[in-house]
Length: 434
Image: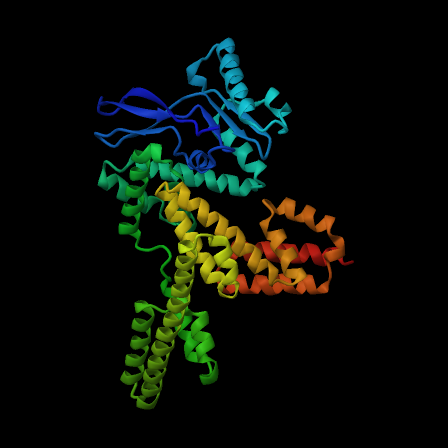
């Protein structure tokens, strides 16, 4: 079934009176158009932005949400529409009939006969997230992020009001919030380019006012300086690699200030030692960056060779020894760019290459590592727990050890969610041993 296009509607801006047209979705079938899910969850679906004054308005419209994989059929009617019961039934009947025709002959259909109905949009969104295994705390945090994004967007037309809101809510403008905002931007469909432009404007203003939220804090820089001051000479290279994300202009500025303080105290020998170590740290950082650049360039070269071949998958398998994490990251970045550009033909080839690359990497894994990958690929923590219980024979002390080792690795990479999930799996696996 081809993607369902939004229905064009004629609108009048409530702020300046400008008349313009916008698209509105009444059927959100994420089975066919998965990109609409994130747009809906991010509050960017059925939002119209006035081309004249940039005022954003949420369009009140009935909606049917469908996810065949989770057997979800959810219906929302805005109360302000005051739709007659017979009109609502006709709308739902037409939508579910259309969905049934789009499903494969052997697909389940019973859930479409009794769709769940919702009086508010937030309650519908909660049901979607709960089906994804998202906790109540995460639901509330996500809702707060959405509300704050909407509030910031509403202040774009008044710079002073925008700044005042940022100061008032500064504690909530965390890296997690900025990551959520970036995800909303990526998920906004091409049919709502005005909404994406508005979100980019919010993001740009926030970065201007707050700086880079991912930049290390003064306390983190100070901690990195102390760590590298205390490191033994023979461990300095490893210590620098661990602290690489903290080593930037601010780090060297703090280190130079430390040298100046020692010189002012008259300790020339210590000042010389700190200067020598600063030079070593700089040399190590430059070497690490050259190595990283070489690794990613190798991944780019491999992808180029594979894409030029008449059979990309066969070409990749011939070069299996060069498939590594760097290649996967290069492939992922290129696939995302192809998706944003609407190059479905190129995206399809990237997906085929990705599947073959995963098979190559998995073929190198031990049985424990393969099982851990299966656990991590489960859609929710609950599904992972079920998988553990179905495979009790695979649970042994080596598995628990590997789970904790992988958790340590992810913590060093600052990948906290994956590390926490691995720790939880290790605890559950350990409990099943007794």
